[in-house]
Amino acid sequence: MKRSPPPPVIDAARVVAYAFVDDIPYLPAGARILASEGLDQAPRLAIAVRLSEPSGPVIFHCDEEWISRGASTAESIERAKQDAECNYPGVGNRWIDTNVTVEEALAFYDSETAGLRCSFCGRRPFEVEGLIEGPQATICRGCVEEFFCDFQLDTSEMVGN
Ligand SMILES: [Zn+2]
Image 1 (cartoon, rainbow, N blue to C red):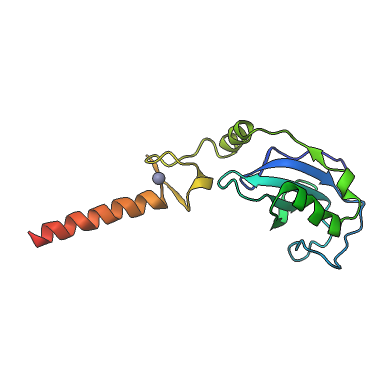
Image 2 (cartoon, protein in one colour; image 1 turned 90 degrees about the vertical axis):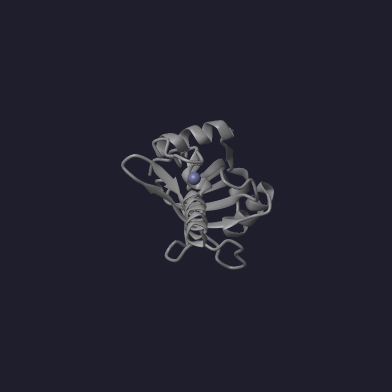
């Protein structure tokens, strides 16, 4: 199996480190990482930081194509590596840093989403709850609610008069 490096972004998170673990037997005992059902042995691990919230990193349990099949969170990148070590003993000296910058990650994200943004507030898909694409414009749920509330207000004022 060819071992290709991951894309700069997985599931709207900037990949900071990755490791190949297809040849390390998965240790379920004492596991602090919960892979999704049917994926006890992930061949790839990626530690990433969500683009939306610069909080603790995420560990992605990926398949050979770097598609995330399960994810867990950690307080820090060091902690994420310690967690991974519980499931994949020896992975500690395999981590490869990507050095992907936030700018590079956002550029990749925009290329993947064709630069999709809310036409009204300019936010990207990962920054909003939901984007509704229309023929002329795209609008996020936040803007819909804002405009809808304004509309309700205006209507009640009109009725009041
Ligand atoms: Zn918006």
